[in-house]
Length: 576
Image (cartoon, rainbow, N blue to C red; front, top):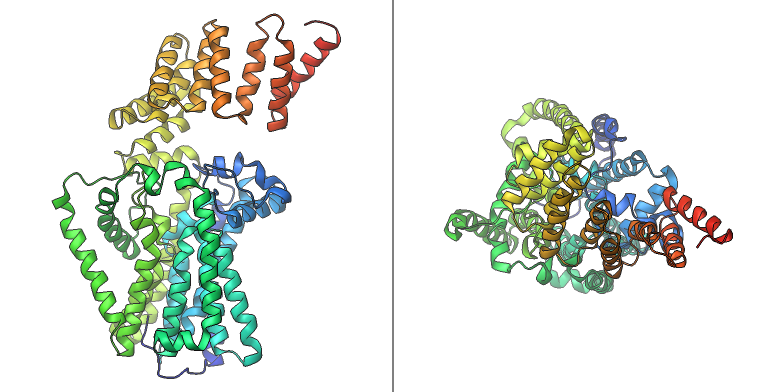
């Protein structure tokens, strides 16, 4: 971000009107790039977080997200999903439409922040250009088109508004300051309930004040300490929410099973990849999976490069020259946004494109300032070509979301060593019986890459159970799954289904009961057990109870409703 002036310069209204038209044009380009994807299907974690998430279907439960989903420990995110459901129903278009509106609002808020941060003759041009490029950069598609990654875009909007409202409070009259500062703290609180990356917002707001207004941390604190205490108080809510997720169901933190050193070795390479994609967004990959570093020395160049950059940022931030301080703030923003996902170990993805949603801002801002300096009057031509090009690339990337099968085929083609992606491609193929052989090949490929991956064995077992002559294979594969993951309720249910098909109802009933001990609200297992119990004389009451539970847990399960009606009719006739 550009060097600040020694005093706050007034913002001219003439450039504002001209660049407001510029921003409107950028918003139209973004809408054109994203609107064709509105009705594309739900994908990946959209299933448990949206499709199967009953809490978003009623206002009373909107702030109570289910466990083991992307929305876990993020009540504001869950409430926003409930809003989409209330306004647009269960289809993907309403959810994705609100995602797009959040992204557009984020770009306008970013424009407001940049035009109050950048100074100099070309500041208005640089602010509008950087905000427009950020809006249209294809790297952003994962945070917009992949619906559940609203976690990133909504948090991003609240993060930017926290800073914007604080800046307006700094600039405003004595009468207006309280309102702006109050809105800023409120946005910070909501952001903490949206995604954990918001943790750095209070620090970056204070550093903005120190870098661009107050001149020192002490001066900023003395002038506005009640506001900064308000920001700090929002960390308490974040701490409670983080603890409530128990390491995001064992996928993050100390419960992930991944050591800090092992994970940290992966992050320099991930950060360098992010920087490359920020400048050249190809290829874009939906799921990178885990990319462990087997030879620590191989990571040394990346470690040194990132360490040198971080050291340079720290030195620049504490220089007395305004320009160096601004450069240090830009670098600090980049590293602070990436810090939570770069420092806290995870066992599912060592890199993900949505993590660059906010971290992309300083990269593009510095790029635009370099273009302004190097190209002079030719800068307008360069930007006039770049913006439509980004819009075209974003539209092309969005076409990969046109079907679940297309998305996973694209992912596996670009990341063939990711066993999780191969499992998901297998699931997409298995939806059509014609593709059963291809689906089996993907599951088996995933097992070769990761022999201990329970989901690959479980889904392969589920596939074998549907193919004539492969029932014994289904039972054997289910048992392999349970040796790897004995607490996986779905594997117990799949094994029970196969045992039922093999004419072994007593063993099947025991497996359904095991599934329900692990997952008492497992509606389909209650339904399956109800049917199985009909094989045993004198267990009609139990069958009715399980059918009732299945209907209560999932009122949309028509088969369970029909079974319950039939069982009650038999009960009335005395057929027990």
